[in-house]
Length: 348
Image 1 (tube, rainbow, N blue to C red):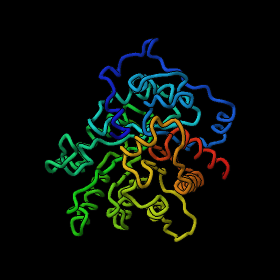
Image 2: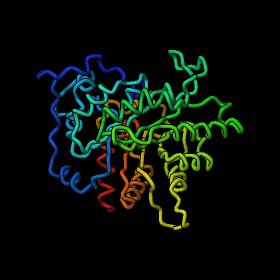
Image 3: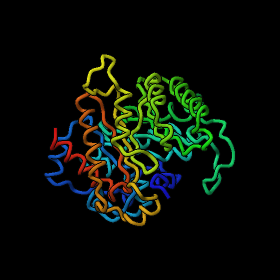
């Protein structure tokens, strides 16, 4: 089961005010961590893909809590961590959330915090799937901008308000027939039309739309040109199904290429990164290997170095950097974020 499914398992009473017995205490931050947080530029938003992990005792949480307790009432303590300025909100991937749900999350975090929100599979999966994940039929709402705006963009931005970061549309693995020309060319045109039709402003906010793919065959110059024309960002998604982060950075650089052919790379929009999974592992294998996710177990210095470089480009470009790290990347999302922050600050 993927980490994001933890959020989907939250109890139905998540609107209820926490009781004294359910209050989660944040871990005490030492001076070195506080100093590192002060040195990290304000618009670098590091965070993890969820917050409901009991193994983070002493790292994020100050006591022993169950997964259910943390899922229900742990967000405020998570957001009190000096370096965790963002979190991935994947709960709505499985079922669209109402505006009130997003507002509930926003009330639990400080105004400088950001949510990187995953769009519902209702509009990002080309097929409908059975209980085991197998395709059962074509999805009539795939890349339907009207449905996406009504059931995702509007409620998410209105509910999250100032805490809204990037809205990520992660395309589920596509049927093979859609990945070969000319069908792939038509699909890319459809992607461009989808982003072009989404709202340009909601509740006085300008949305940050970002596309994440799960099929390497889609990462083509045609897709990059299309996203640029539509004003959408390309997510650097670290996942075994995709080229390594450095190759994806090349596509991102092409997306932001200066019209004057300057050799200086400046981002034209926010950096959006999702460091999902260690190369060579499947989710279930990584879960067995890394649980309870309380320490780094497989440091990936190559990927980390690439992400630090991208963060520096974002800083130099005066653009926000949203970097979400899964426990299954190196073994412990919060510690990965700390190591990223240390490398960014050391090389600023």
